[in-house]
Image (cartoon, rainbow, N blue to C red; front, side, top):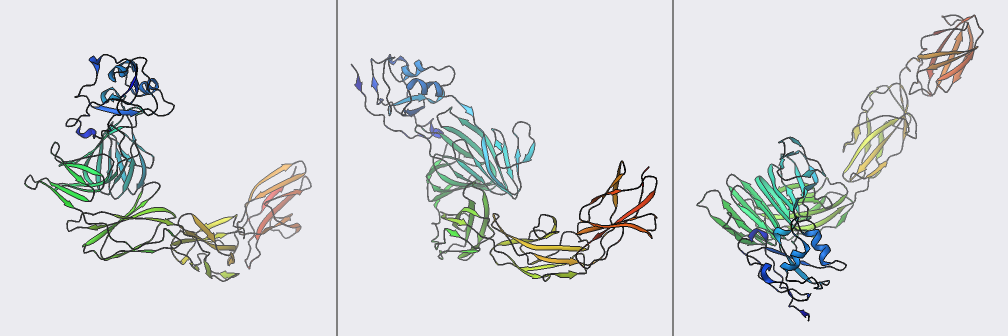
Length: 544
């Protein structure tokens, strides 16, 4: 005869304190046949994790996926006092000793990096630049100089490393497919911002240790700074147990704590400055700067942090005085803007958070000089224009045709209104325009103008001559600023007696010659502009 047992009371206990608090025995909400022998039933000294069976799952399949080698489905049934014929339905819960779960190291992944950041391998001590999508394994250390990094852990928790910091990854354990993780980090220097995902039923462990303190959390957002003087903590969401190992105290959201390396200092807990009252800003802007303003609150200073929403990349962090800050120099994208008051110790309080979507549109520049069709006697003419948009950079492009398929040179990208070409221009006819970029993704071009650079076209040199029967094919160098070429054929090297002359658009020509006679050929480039041309050296032709 089966009977329905009482529902298991949900117990939330962080693994960081398993030695102090163990889950009490509770009956399972499932249909049970004759109970198995209690000889192997749960012991009050065994830390457990509770699993709720989902639709489409079976007890045997879940147990096979979660249990480590050396533990069987039959053992788990016996542990939960389930007979072989007991029916476990969707929504029923059963207990698994934590030390029965399959464990495996699970590397963290770098979501974004700004500036100079290095990874020191825990295996061989080698240093290498940290890049987005790099894997961080147990024993590795991240060292930031002037850069920042955002690291995502196996359960989706996020760690943001400030400049001038050192963070060691001591443990990155995942309990099979249970979704639970055991993460232990050591902050030897600097500052980290964390967002820890809420743990699953039964608890998981997330711990940051410093030389003077330990912070153990579950499902929270907090910041830790450490230095030779001690460790500081600010909790913005959830609860953190903080202090010397074995003597931690609970610090709730809205409070901060400090622990000095001086033993006489002790652990101090204080209320954080409240989030500033920030004036609304548009969620989507098409021009920058946008003014961030807030009410005076008596704080000596404030801190503005801007994060890229998708990657978590730390874009900028500024300490400001007064009650306003101009947000500028951002690429197109979605951001999170945080503003927090700083106390007299320089510690940040509760942040006010605002979303910001930047959608800048590049505007065509207005060309100023040279004028349309102008001529220049300088091979490095200056180009001037007027920018018409917000937060734009621009460059001048110079081409041999008005479609700009034959791009000859450009200037550097810069937020300027004038530029020189990156290399001298040979005499000839050109087209120029200004390309404008805004927000890193929006690009547009100005109108195109013609420009003639005065001077002489370079001489045209013959590259090769091929003989085939009574025909000779000639190949010559291309002159970028030439529109066509003039060919002369003579019986003498002085070209006094011209027997053939032709104007050609290509860089090759075929000539039919009389065998046994000597000829001489030469070419010069021609241009539509007021440019002088020079003949290239002559080449002797002889057909046997």
